[in-house]
Length: 351
Image (tube, rainbow, N blue to C red; front, side, top):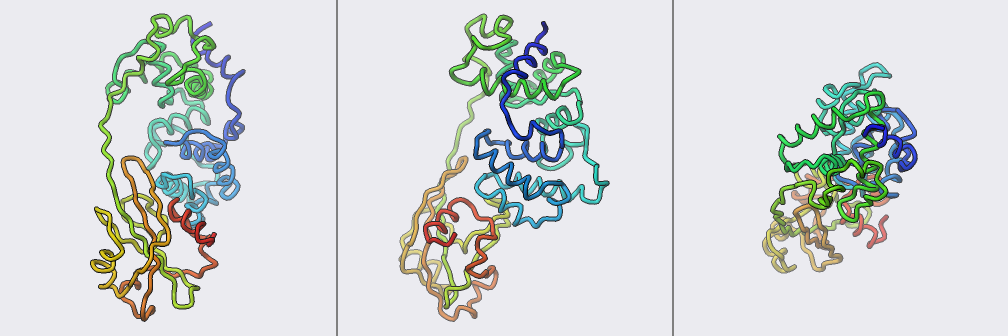
């Protein structure tokens, strides 16, 4: 029995039961692939997927939605650019025939947010194109199985892997083959504590035979730089505490497209006295208390966040506030916020 047949037989008996595997609907599978970019499969991820599909069951429904409503359904999942790109994809296809969907790898990869892996996964699973979908699991499985010591972070190495995998694929069932490799890497051929004795291809595996399982794959260690940022959010109501001041983040920074409060950012920790002296007084806004603190860790960033309870005189005449959005207290749940803002709103019992 050849490599691909062993892998597929194992998969058909041991595959993970996932909702997007019960369909060949390319849009539903695309949603799952977007959600799983930089995110592991968990019960929480599956819950997000099911809720998103329920709200936006078709490309047309997604295209018709407002960005804030799409981000609201994505709220808490992180990496919000994924949701923005998925929404953009739907809007680009809204004028196409109702059953139109890019079917080939070369067509899918043209769209923003759809990279090599996602394009190959959709093309193979939904449209039976014979093309390897190579993610971290695939690099690990094939580097160990074939004894490939090329650095997987290099583009030249990635080409070598794709050539080898293309020759080993099942040409009749490329989608099942790609999913089988993914599950093998997730269930058995794991980075640590690999379950080699349960592997269907162990007797022909280079690393199993030579005791080099944990030497592969070879991956250059990247130097991680952590940036510390200090956020001071101005928690501002109108005089009757009925209208809340919020802001949509539009710059190419974290949380683009989400909403937060008027923000003062500093490169160092500030006291209330310093904040009032250097920032707030010029805008005729005074803060007397810090009502909530949270530290939020992102990739290569640590955010030290404080929420300041602010007092404003002549609320409607304040020039600083004219660039912000004012929403009724009871409408706050309609807007998507980053996790630290959600924690604060829960602390204040506003959601």
